[in-house]
Picture (spheres, rainbow, N blue to C red):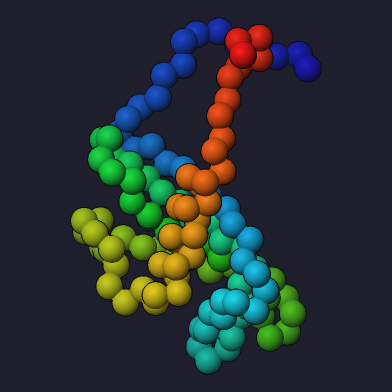
Length: 118
């Protein structure tokens, strides 16, 4: 690889985001849109912390198979229009997916040390 890098990277604490992907066991979550059922098989949940506030789930992107067997994607906004709390009317099953993603992110127990500094 021919790449060089310099500097002291730092993050901006204004809006830190983490995306957590989980595989959904086929047949355990059905999304219905316009009368058609779609079987979810993957969810990507976006969590954010604005100005070092507690983490909040912003959205979840689902990958699902439709009645014709083709893959489709759905995005569900989880924050209210004012971004001051959870959106009303989000089904409990979707919040369960968010909870599973949050739990799996914490349970993985990822630790990291840069090479040569372990």
